[in-house]
Length: 94
Image (cartoon, rainbow, N blue to C red; front, top):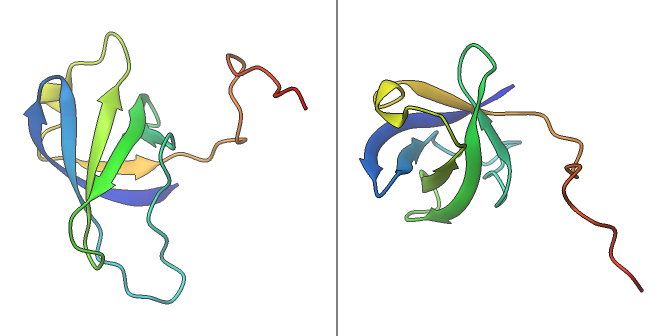
């Protein structure tokens, strides 16, 4: 579990997260569609967009259905370990 940052605001049912500072060594900015979880390991949503300064970006999180986003404002969020594919995604045809 890698720390994503602190949830700052709720805008149009999306969470705006202030990312952790990037120190340049092994810190990576999370990719779009990465799973976002809370301290308890509950899935909160997915990364929708990353914007702002490179050294400490802002991240937009699209929330899962049934998640009360106001509970997470001011709290730390994390990037979950994913297998790279969800069951919903279909295999690409070549």
